[in-house]
Length: 490
Image (tube, rainbow, N blue to C red; front, side, top):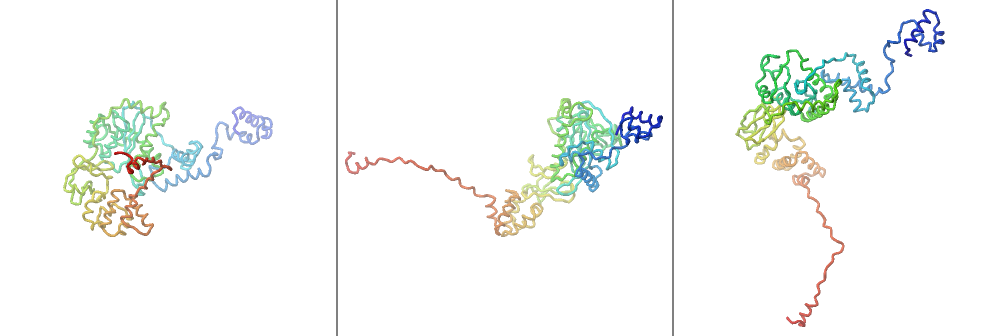
């Protein structure tokens, strides 16, 4: 029982000055002997509580506690220092995945007790609308097509509204850096007066801080989009603390648990969706939501130029006799009609496009390994039709079609049939062709004609609906009879 100071004063006076027993004090004051025993000798005071009651909040069931522990165990198993569950992230997952109805403070206390870790502190910053954005790079781990990969997060944040933009790239190279900046400006629908960044080589040619000289293409980009480049001092991360906090926030709130995606585009769609969702957030100490501040800030941003800056690293390459071009230590195929011709290759952060006379002839996800060859079956199908005996050993076939389709092809009557099967793959897609072949295999027979029949089924005939009774107007023949008998003059 917690008592007021006045009651504490009476207990102490009766015990110290009047030498009353604990039983007598309890009777005189109408309180329990336990309360008297607790306070009579002055070892405890009512205005200071020691610890908590020790009771577990009613919402923290064993399932909730086990889930919290499992999150922390997963963090230890993955062992990725900058991508672990925070108390906020655990709370959000409990609400979303388990319908938790308790308070966030409850979860924070449990997580703190389990971790016994001191909280972080941040320095508040203040900027005028459209005054500046901060940019930074961060690393994160994902599962890309089932394989654990490290990706680079380009992060940009408005200093006034705290609106944010994040995009994942394979590398922190110049083309990714410039592409990220332009994508960020387009996301904010305008350009701020200053862009604050550190002294990374991707942006700085020499020097540091106020003495830094920007890389030539970054300097050209700044001139075209009319913003000033500003670089932080060495080891002064606090000079761009907003975006430093964003890097960690994205890792903890979007990339935990470790995302499993089939492509970088899928990951970037999830990142963009979360950035847009953040606009409904209201930052502590501010009267407006992020979205409301974004609308105010947007009116002061510099308009985007009509010409979109080309961020790619562009080279000219000659198509070799194997109908491939070389870019970044790797080969990419183009249609065989372009053999021995010069084409333009534009390398962007995550993809490349190949152009001939202002027409795009191929596009690929950019490969950052060495010695790889990327093929597209449709580039070679015409050549393989002219040389069908090469089909089972052709790299463009073996490297692009599945082993399932190869096995189906081997069950046909020969290379020419296999080539026709590949043509069906180009026209209909491999999945549909395999599905049609599986239908044939159910009958223990397979032929190209059967596969084509499943791919091009004959539509059912539309029955013609006839009336139950058809009225026929009978023609009178009496006049003709008279003619035959000669009764009528002609």
